[in-house]
Length: 291
Image (cartoon, rainbow, N blue to C red; front, top):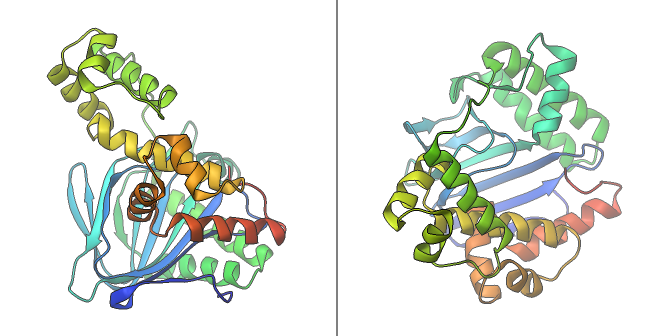
């Protein structure tokens, strides 16, 4: 790893979250966590994780899975999940975060899948592919973009061929889903100064408890949890353009930088300052802004 690229914490925890120069649309996280726990959140793109040591418990909408060495975890876009250590010693792992467009590009070139590609399995025992995930990281850490891109595409093509399928097309939304989508749009547009639950429910034409039920059914989490996740996502974009963390915090609606630090670190896995430094380092070595 580059000097200064790793965030070290107490209890032997460390993490690095960065982007591989030459592979736009791919973020990487390599870390060891013991006490750190990811709250319920979701990603716009995919999550592909390979545990090297220990056990990671991943809480999915349909239950908890335990990822041990040799397994690969595959989470489709917008699927809410949380994670924490499954053993007292924690877990260390390598994770790839490819964008939807990048996975779709590989699917079109290397598979017979049509439609929107995704994964039908959440966890599989596949030591060879888990090793390839770690090799993508090794190549990226060595700034070998050619090898990283080649290995990454090999991983995605293999996983799609073995465990991939076209995701079901969304049919017409029911009334409750339309209400939740409207509430989500309002929160996204007014992120820095959102309405109260009662005001939001009145604006979309329902009651507070009915909105809570509809929103959680649609997005797997209540509005306030979704909003925190969305604020962190918006802050990431600001940090990637060089915005200082204190300014990013206020721009997305956090009361101050410590609030951003706490939520950002819990959800992304590294503090916002370290995230910003990694992005600046990526751009200097020829990488582009993530998709």
